[in-house]
Length: 168
Image (cartoon, rainbow, N blue to C red; front, side, top):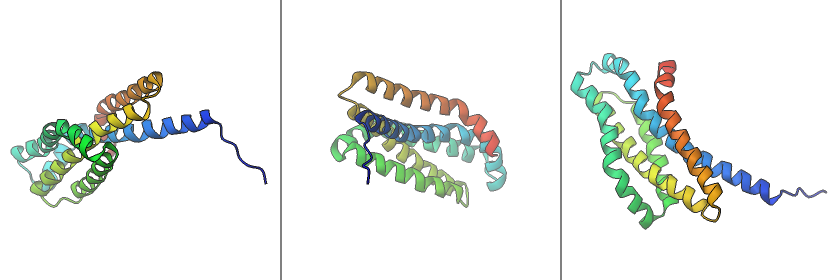
């Protein structure tokens, strides 16, 4: 039986792709959520017969929770561990996203949007910390990782309205 030998470079490349891909996808979904909901507002308004103030809260609940907690989440990552906080944020964001899809009225949607914002606030700073620590030994690789992460987030903001339109 022949033993499969994987080069160190191949392991390193696979690790790079996994770490950057995972952290970037978290950044992408958190940013997509900001822009896609704006495209869905007419459908949300008609489904829930929501008034303008409820629609405003549906948009702002996520953003407020995210903005208020993002800086604190960096400190929480130091206390609890960035990986643990990242995993918590992913789980919370995912559960809240399902909750948004199953919402029964504007109030429940607003509540789930707040939870999404909390999840995103946990994911974003910890994902950047994970990137920095994963490639701390190699400045060039760390630079490429952060650039890919940033580009993914920026592209998702631009793609949000287009994807939202296609999905709706």
